[in-house]
Image 1: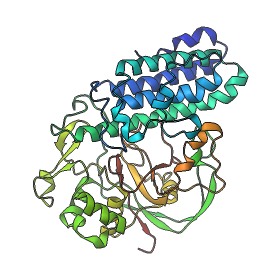
Image 2: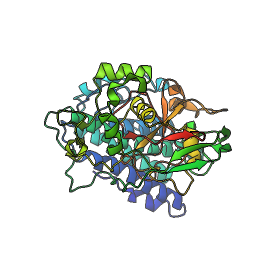
Image 3: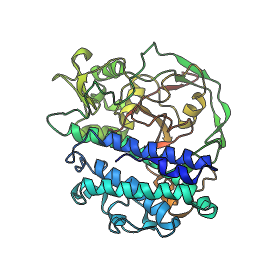
Image 4: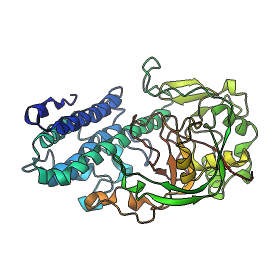
Length: 420
């Protein structure tokens, strides 16, 4: 049942911010249900790999976050829906108790999808009452956590799409998530000739500027020194990446980082994960197809290449006589008017390790585990993809994944040193 925020109105006419937050809460929660609507109960229970989660688990976990982080500690007389769910749908919060092993989330045939949806309705009704009635002292602690929970849920909305795409790709029928007549994602913009934007470098401020919401890993804002560099004004296209394949890109170890070449050999990589070759990976691009949320479609040579690992992005950059930008070079270029496709297409790999900023301090309480403890062995991506909820990202947003991750909507923007 869709979330209806109207129950807030009667108690909050003098405080319009409560109505505004209730409306935003309803919009985010309803969008999650809309993303799950095309999926059968069977679709929503299966886990295709340890790095992905079933859609039913996403529906439950995003409700668990509001229950465990907001309601249980801050809402007076809160009635827990089912105490067993605290274990089943905890993701990685050690401070909040035990959890079901991540690789075994697909074994949770119980609770049923209907029970999970009832759990969401229970949490939604209580959160809306809390927004309407919370006293100032409770609100001081819980208000920021509700905003964090909404941004957390938007992250899981993207994961619902990326995880279901991987799941459906494992089905030999290659079924579509939705028909092409019902657009799922924003279409890629037309592609012009690639131009290089000259960036003067120098000392620039990076990180969240303090207006509006940001995750803790975007702070504190601080200066960095950049050497002069050049950055591409648009993303690398499928057609350009096909030239890399045709030139033997997946067969030339000199183009690859050592770990990347090992991944190519171990995984038998010959093209991006959802590309379908007509027998010969070096065939003309007109013969390639790609599997996406709308099923199998002809590959669009003008579309940004997607579903690349960091290793593939770095190898392509080496082949192209370029490199990947650092996350700070990317952020400094984000405000340049000539830059295109900075968000809404694919996440863009950078050459930056996911490390804390100088003076970084995690959030307090259980949510201190949200970002900081993952700051090792990961690479930063910037921008936002066609699967990212509109309005969720900003230039300082830091996404992160291990370098071998291929199932996300991730692609390439090139950079060069100024002397190249």
